[in-house]
View 1 (spheres, rainbow, N blue to C red):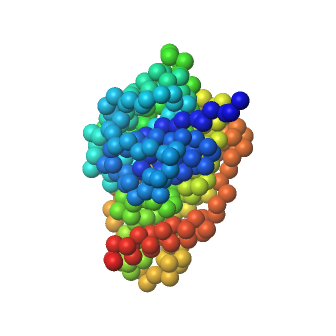
View 2: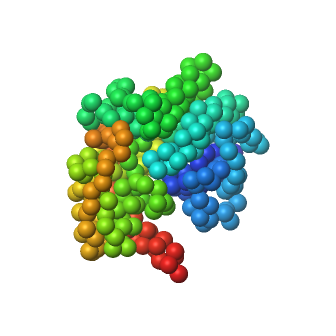
View 3: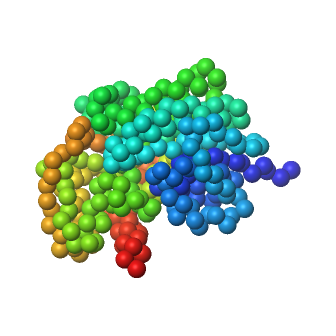
Length: 319
């Protein structure tokens, strides 16, 4: 008997991570429906998929009722503004997609008896008092600060996901995503790597917040998607960190990007944003043990691929 083709729905499917996830699911033999309202997503991220008979794009705001015809096997909820510049500009939409959007996506999973995976974030740990951050850490979040719209939306989304799991017996997964970079990032989304690279390529001053001593652990997108796919196919219900535990200060990252681009850019310092985490590093013990996953792409290799992508993008803008 022929195997049934699994059908996966990806909310936020035209975004940075969502589009890479659509690629991976299609490669794994899934039929994919991508849903996005395009407030931060971009159809250019999925343009290469548009001719595929196994891929459908639906422009829709998932805070409204989601209708999908026929059976659905997997729902991956990635819809949300995800960079500080976006969620500070779109605070209400960020809160709505984390709350109402998660509720609607879980409702669809319940109706279709589908497995549901929530894209959560390391931001649930806030400005952490424990380092590195294990999944057991409850976090240090300012609920009324400007970043709270994203942090609390994701914390609520996790609580809602677990409520549907416990009360409605929905088969759920939660991934806590740490800083990720790679092709298809928007160069003006305010995150350090696309900002530093685009400034370096243009020969502009590179803007580092504070003294640049704050650290991040940056994971190349292919590694992240591998971890997410393994989690989706696992039996692990509780939140799981996926990220690269190799930590670097923002100042050192800026210097590394200047060296890799051969830029003449100078580093300048500006005020640290409110509630900006001083450290961020995943404890990935669980992912290593449960998913047999660990980040494999070294930072230099990942940065070179990202620089090449952003350089092509900037050239398109010039022409």
